[in-house]
Each structure stands twice: as structure tokens, then as C-alpha cells.
Amino acid sequence: MSRVITMDDELIELLKKLLLKPEKKYKPEVGLELDTVSPESPNGIYVYDGGREKWVLKYLNGDFFQPWEDGLFVVYFDNAKCPACRAYDTYWYPFVKLIGPTFRNSHYVIVLCDWFAKECDSEIARGSFQKYDVHASPTTLLMYSNSGKIILQDKLEGVKRMDELANFIQEFLEKVSKIIGHRREESLRN
Image (cartoon, rainbow, N blue to C red; front, side, top):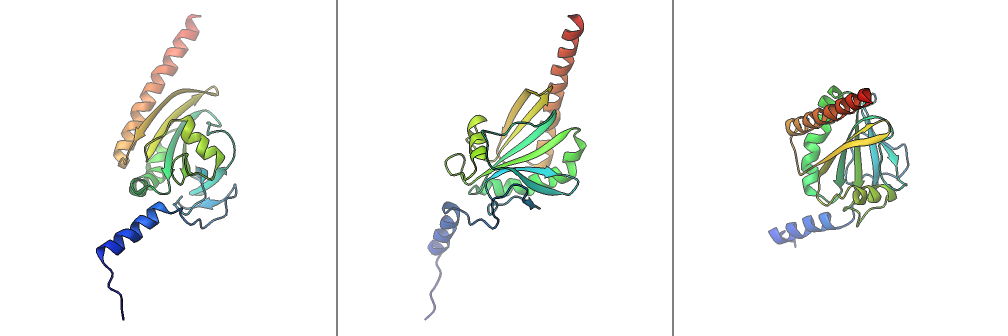
């Protein structure tokens, strides 16, 4: 006798998938390279390697993410259990690959947890969600590091199309230019 699948059964299965801890396909090892970071990927901090077009798991442990050199850092706070993040992925990955390289000295980073700092197997990813006060997903954090210090940061919450993300970054970089220009003028006066 065959069982009839009802709409309630489908809804329950969907909720189970969303609420249960995603099954991880990969072992959490620094150096893991992926084409895209997915809910099945280990929690941690991934950095895009544009030359190889791969996302590399760079950090599992530590306090929180910090820029490692001067330049623009575009950081996507992703939750494995977040349906809106899966929608954002359809814009994020093409953006990083196609438009990202047009921004000079830019670095693209993903901080992945299962569900914010509450459910996160990576100490540094959990600490990053806390440090940068991320309570909505997806969240894109822009940071600009100059002379080893973050001189400006701004957050964008929700799903954004590629053009919206590009405009946000461009406006952010214009603010950075004004800050750097203002600092140069001050140092010349002193």
C-alpha cells in the first residue's frame, strides 16, 4: 500500500531540513578549497582566491576576523540554516567573480556558522559574529584597513543584487577616499 504525501508532510520535511544541523560534507581543515561555500561546508572563515577561483578555509580558531593587510574587505556573514542566505548566494558568487576584481586592493571573505554565534563549530567565526554585532542574515560588512588599522566599516543587511552591492561598495570607497585625503591634508599641515 503506497502512502500519500500531503502538503503537511512536505512542510514537516522542509522544516526538519532547516532546523536540523546541516550534514557537513567536508572535514574542517584549514586549506580546504571549494568552488562555493554551502550549508554543508565546515563553519569557519573562507577567503576567495581570485587567481584559482576557489574559496579557501583560512581560519577555524582565534578570537575574530581581522584584516590581514591594507585594503577593502567585503565580508559576507552567512548562516547555513538561513534561506535568505541561499537567495543571496545567487548574487554573491557571481559578484565576487565578475565584479569584485574591478575594486582595487579588495578581499572577499565569508564567515560561516550554522546559526549565528549560537550554533557555530568555529571559534573565530562565532567570535566574528559577536565582535561585529551581526544579528541578521545575510549581512555584508565592508571594512577598509589603512596602515594596519580599520579606518571605516559599514554593514548592509539582507539580500542585495549585484548592482546594489556594487553601488554600496562604491559609495563606501568614496567615503574612504575622503577620510584618507583629509588625513593627508592634516599630516601636511603638521
